[in-house]
Length: 113
Image 1 (cartoon, helix red, strand yellow):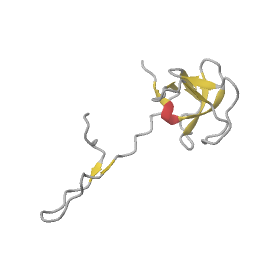
Image 2 (tube, one colour):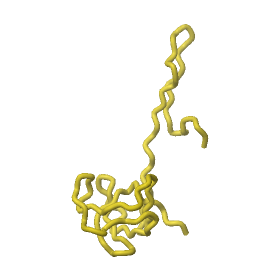
Image 3 (tube, one colour):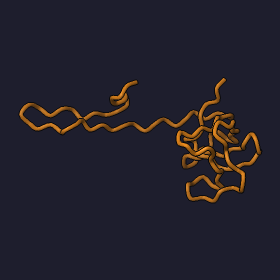
């Protein structure tokens, strides 16, 4: 932990003596790992939006499924096929309403036991 670059970050080496060095090291962060998907996951967003509407297809510009087909913050979600992630989306069924559609995998987290 800390404020410096993570272990996965690449840092440009310092310039040799006599040459001007960049003002600050160039840090390239590694992509965050995609969550390990299992049959049951927890919907949790890191922003202030309290729910996520389900999509009809696995893409950002797809239509929403229907009214009230949204995963609530901290709702348990059933993944219909955890191994079939497409474009960062996975097909899900909501535990509360049993609505089905596509949800971003970035919003899915392991269920606490």
